[in-house]
Length: 315
Image (tube, rainbow, N blue to C red; front, side, top):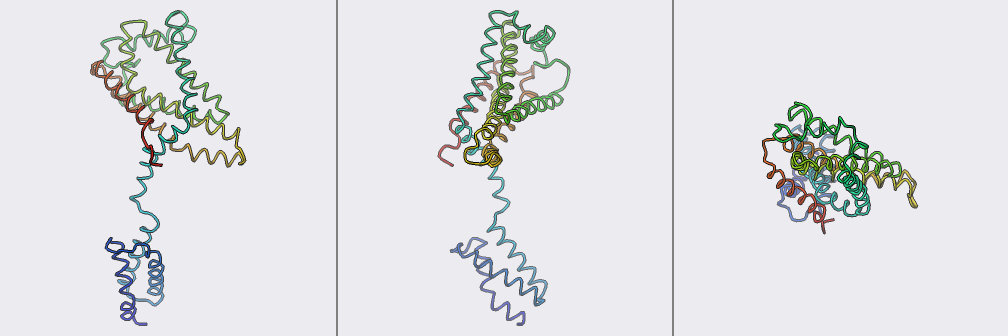
């Protein structure tokens, strides 16, 4: 068959496909069948040695059909958005028992140790050395250009330090959860103990109380939440190994990992953004304390509201 006759026989097919791709067609359900016929046309065009211009046109049309049928680059960012705005909060709410457990361990230890140090300050030396406690007191003295820092490092340097510290703690806590969840709970309890000692020790001194709480209130909304979510994710994987049900342990671990993946990603992103706030906002001595308290309160309200209401009715 000559090329001219081939083009005349298939021109209507190509025009119909082009109209569907441009949005002018009416029955888009016919596109898969039309796509198969178009692929046949391209194969015949290549086999019979028709002109390069016709071959190129058909190849572009086949490529456009393939992207329309099997996914486009526009849809890929929506996956991340769905993870963060729908799957992430919904799966955190679904695992509310584990979240409650990690919260009780962290805040229970922090509150208990904090009360002990508040009423019996000498107990602080049982959890930290005298040099460490004095160093913390120096870091939160009023009038410092960079609050909460023991040295003269700049914002960028401290931002890198906070990323390493926050993310490493989060991932170690998550990894510890695989061993039945016990190491993860120990890590959460240890961090709660450290916070309780330092918070109570610095709150006893009126000179450092406001400096300390105004420093931690903003980034703690993301940092502490991210830590608890990492612990919760690790514990869920550890429980899948302990109690796989009717599945093999490998299958149970694989399913739990896929299910908790948005939570792991979300918790890690929260610790990352907490490091950014801690490096460039919390440590700044130029920002008034009342402004830090106000912004910190808004951040806590947004975090709590996000996990309470985001994604409801959309799964």
